[in-house]
Every structure is written in C-alpha cells, then in structure tokens.
Amino acid sequence: MKQTLGNTGLVLQEPLLWEKGRKGRSGFSFPKRDVPSAVLSSELTGPGPDFPDLSELEVVRHYTRLSAWNFSVDAGMYPLGSCTMKYNPKINEKEAGLSGFQNAHPLLPGSLNQGALRLIYELEQFLVVITGLDAVSVQPTAGAHGELAGMLLMYAYHKSIGSKRTKIIVPDTAHGTNPASAALCRYRPVPVKSNEQGILSVESIAQAMDEETAGIMVTNPNTLGLFEENLQRISEIVHAKGGLVYCDGANMNAIMGIVDIGKIGVDIMHLNLHKTFATPHGGGGPGSGPVCVRRQLEPFLPVPRVVIKEDQYVLSEDFPQSIGKLHAFYGNFGVMIKAYSYIRSMGAAGLKKASQLAVLNANYVKERLKDVFHLPYDRPCMHECVFTDKIQQASKIATIDMAKRLMDYGFHPPTIYFPLVVSGALMIEPTETECKEDLDHFIEALRAISKEAEKNPDMLHQAPFSCKVKRLDETAAARQPCLAG
Ligand SMILES: *Cc1c(COP(=O)(O)O)cnc(C)c1O
Image 1 (cartoon, helix red, strand yellow):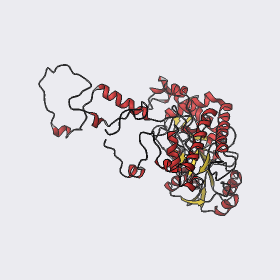
Image 2 (cartoon, protein in one colour):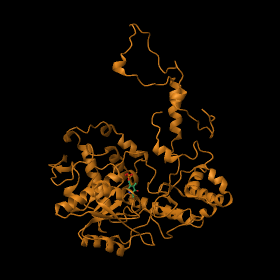
Image 3 (tube, protein in one colour):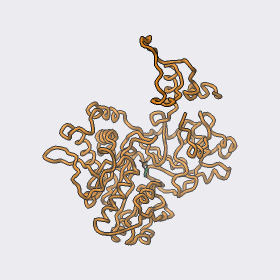
Image 4 (cartoon, helix red, strand yellow):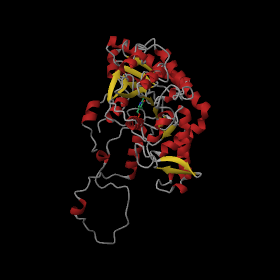
C-alpha cells in the first residue's frame, strides 16, 4: 500500500482484501475435530478460489471504511442535473420495511395479498391524477424501460389500426435514452433541432412530421431545463398526421400539480418514481418507470394489471391486445411502496410545493452564477439550469477541471458534458430539498472556482487535491474493467 493512512482527515485508505490477508489469520474458531480429516476431491470442487485469510476485525474495518467512501445525498448536496437527487424521507423506507410488505411472497394468491395489490392499484390512480392521463402500469423498472414500454405501445397502436410507420421524431434536447428506445423498437429516430430559445418550434415539427412517422418523443421539461411551451400546438400537428405524442416525464419534478400533461396533448408518458417520487437511486437501481397513457392506449398496457373484480383486487392477464409482460411479477414493488408513502405524506399541495421550490432553487442558482459562467439560454428555467465553460476557456480551463475542483470544496459535481446540445455543459439540479444556506455555500464554491480559473489555471488543472483518487482514466475503466479483485 503506497498511500499513507488517514490522508484526508480520518477518512482511511483501504487496500483490497487480497492485499490485506496473511496466511493463517481467521475470523472464527471451530471446536476441535473429532473425526479424521479428509481432502475433498478436486474433481468435485475444482481448484477452488484463492480466498485471503483475514481476522474478523480486518473484515469489519474493510467494509466499514469502504462504506464511508460512499457519497450520498444523506451526506451532502448532490446537484447532478437530470437525476433529481432529492433527499428521500426516511419514513418511506420504514413503510417499505413493514413486515407485511417485506415478507409478502409474489406468488401468494391474490386473496392473501389484498394489501399489496391495493397499494399498486391506488398508486396507479395517484399517477393518473398527477399526470392528467387515463391509465397507468407501474410494471417498467426504469425510466428507459418505461420509454421502451411506451414505444411498444405506440407500435401496438399503429399495428391495431393497420398503419405501418417507420420513423419517430426525437428533438436534440431529448434525453439520450429516447432515440435508443425508439431504435430498440426498430423505429428510425429523426433528429430535430431546438430553436434559439432552446425549445422546439412549431414550424420545425410541421416540416418533419409526415405519414411515415409514428409520433414524436419529447422530453418536457427538456434536457436544457426549459419548458416546451409549444407542445400543445406540436401535439395537434402530430395528431393531425395520425401520429402519437410521447413525453419523457423523468423531469416531472418541475411540474407536479402545475401542468396537466393530458391537456397538452400527450398520449404516452413515463415517470421516474426513483427521481420525482423520492426513492434512493444511483448505482444502478432498483427503479420504477411507470408508463401512463390516454384511454385509447389502455388496452395495450403490459400485463398483468391490477383490477377490481367483485370487490377484490386481482392481477388480470385478460387484455388480449396487451404488449405482454415486461418484468418478472409486477415490477419493483419496494420502489412502489416508497413512492406511495411519499405521495401520501406530501399530499397534492405538498407535491405542487415541491415542484415550485425545485424551480425556485434552480433559478436562484442560475441568477447568482450567470455573471461568472456562460449561460447559453438566459431565460427562466425549470428545475435545472445549464451553464458552459465558454468564459473559462479563455484561460484554458474546461468543465472537467471545475467539476474536479468542486470536490475539494466538499461538493459532488453537477452533471457535466450533458446535454450535448451545448458544448462543455455544466448542468445543475439543486432539487427542492436543499436549503438556502447550502445553496449559498455551493454558489460560493463555484464563484471561488471561477476566480481560480482566472488567477491560477495551472493549479486548477491538477485538481482535486483532497480526494482519495484524483483524475481517473475513465476510458480504461470502461474498456478494461478490473472485476477480479
Ligand atoms: C434519468 C432520465 C431517463 C432515464 O431513466 P433511467 O431510470 O436512468 O433509465 C430518461 N429521461 C430523462 C429526461 C431522464 O432524466
């Protein structure tokens, strides 16, 4: 081990267990053997893994130290744009941990599982009200999974009316998963540029939309954190040519209780329960990406669906036009419980307030930083704002340098180099759960960094200084992952 212990306060370095182990150490003791020893045939066991020998304390310290390296929203502000890393109230975990939920077996007959089925049913009803659409399936288990469900629904709808369409319009401000989901369904994504205000113009869609096009996928608010103000007129154009409107609703945190998605002409939308509805996320799951639809698309929703029959909640497969099953059982039930608990504890007024504060916080950050960072779209934003490194480029400082330096100031960096529509993006989503003092600290840190960029760019190129690891070779990490230990 080359680095010294305790190099950052009392955050300790930790080698791999294989480097730590010493032959003969052990974390347990067996009673003395009273039978002859026998060697297991290597034919049965193979050569066997090379486990290191370690004491109990070494193992405890190893995992405890690693756990302290995790950064989480419980430890500090997590302003990752597009990710909605809001604080997740602990009551939701408690509800999900109730033994009735935790020990419920998914194969229990419905009659013994009424509580769980009712929760799913009611959650879907809440999401109907929140979106203004007519029916929901909470089966998809991620945002992108919800998009895939939405594309399959679009395909099933067109097939049912005998229309064969091959293309989908996807604006340049859509989330990257959108064109991927469309392509997975064999649709060809047709890119459309946003206008100088960062949103879609009615004319560009009128030009792109034709009878070969199945519909449009719009992220709203879009990845620039801007509201697609023309969506209602765009929907009319798409509908007039027989297409459907898909809305990526992963950014719902900006508009809960404010925008009626159904009224602006959207036919299909997915939500991210693990963003907007306060489920801890990051690191790959578990998530939930409910797909919400207008009445005419309800017959195609994934099965099984929770329905009420003779006063009982039942899981029904009786939807002959359904696109089928998208996940084992009914999706990630644990996430549904947390979202249900969050919605019930916030209430309608609370959800609306959350969105208002998320938008207020993002605009506060934007206004207080726009004199030192280039703001490509200088207009009111929704729940996130996007700067670039254009000003700092003059002293050869790039977004990555500033993001790295921010860690020295004790902040998780914002999302960088996304969205792709602006070069060198720095995308900040503070969420509604940060208080003004913490926002001010974050703003001060970024302002200090903008000064350093001017006065001391060489130093900034070396940042971070106080982190356990500094500048990682991210390409090598992806191309040659070390999975063996
Ligand atoms: C996060 C996000 C997604 C993808 O959601 P996952 O759960 O990561 O698959 C899609 N669209 C937008 C706008 C998002 O912010």
